[in-house]
Amino acid sequence: MTVTSYLGAIGAAQREAMEADERVIIIGEDVEANVYGTMGGGKSRADKGDFLQMFGANRIRNTPISEEVMVGAAAGAAMTGLRPIVDLSYSTFLYMAMDQFINQVAKSRYMFGGQASLPVVFRSAMFYGLSTAAHHSDRPYPMFMNMPGLKIMVPASPTDAKGLLRSAIDMDDPVLSFEACLLWGMKEDIQDGEFRIPFGVARTVRAGTDVTVVAISTAVPAAMQAAQKLEADGISVEIIDPRTLVPFHSEAVLNSVAKTGRLVVADPANRTCGAAAEISAIVAEQAFDCLKAPIIRVTTPDTHVPFSPAIEKQLYPNATTIADAVRKAVATKPKH
Image (cartoon, rainbow, N blue to C red; front, top):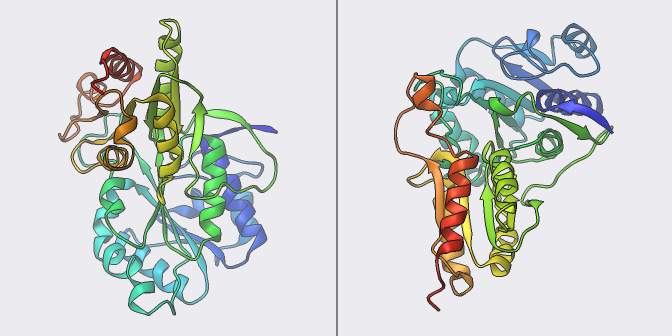
């Protein structure tokens, strides 16, 4: 076990994948100077210069500052046998390549009758919570959940960042990885060497009996803080981290709700048509008889992100808002 940061775990996963398979390449804006993580962080065992020297400019390629070029080139490279990792920097930059994502990357396997595969990973950082204002602060994974053909990972720990990324690189389908910059400095002991975490397998972060909290991305550590506070009040919280939103491990959530009878979904994305809404719908459709209280969503409101640090900080789910939602769920008396 080695203490590793979130970004360091991503760098290690990329290095190990490139060592194991010469078809794995990294492309993106300024990646020659930034091979360990979006916007330049997270050293692993080798420094950045050694990484470039190790694999060479043919496998670590800078691209023009054009997301259409990055995504289109990666799709073509993937269909001809390479396994690209694309560093798209800010998650809002994905919008510039929506035609490539939706009409080419997501649909090509279907349109070619299964004759084409697209083993490509698109990495992007969600820069919310750092006063980067409306153009750089989106959490756009819900809109991509609506497009068949794309797999989506939202790692909330260094272990998950490494294990999920290694699985993503091995896949023959396109994967979008949404990595919260607020987690970059998180450190934990992670397993040495290569390991993989399968997609579609949720993690029970904390076992509990009174309320299920499904938490996404930065809502996971916030939910942990809330659960610790609530424990002093005699409230036992079970926390489920889906880890991947497509595929989504609905059985883990349904089994937890069957035990606790209550559900709170904490998601830093916007409320309308979001991941929290979909998770709530799954439980309402398949586990309604288990519910002792209405489902509660703790999300970011449907508004653009302001530049003001003081105003922005209030938008996202935090330990206080999650704890308040749990208390409300517990206080509701069953009607059946």
